[in-house]
Image (tube, rainbow, N blue to C red; front, top):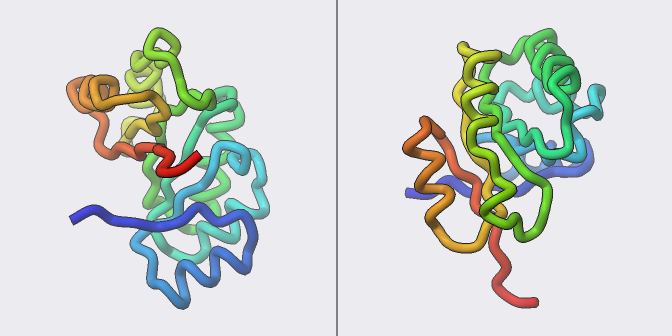
Length: 140
């Protein structure tokens, strides 16, 4: 019951995920949030876009959301994210989810979790997270 996908970093990878694997959504990495031509390409595929916001300022998130909308796609989930691996619990600031929820009331907000353990993502659900993306390592 868990949807799986991969984060694409090229148009070819987007095509593979959508056309070959029929991925249920496209996850955009934080580093590509300001790659507006890439966001437009992804948006035009018509799949829901899960947008990670780590390392981003609000004006960059605004432009990313507008780029996706202007490409005809309003199926967006915005993820609060801290781009530290692993993220110490005291640096998570889940209240940023509330900020995103107030700025983007028409879009669901989730949490991209890089913490160790499960307490922080559980807390994010208590604050209204609709989706959790959990980063983990199987082998170092």
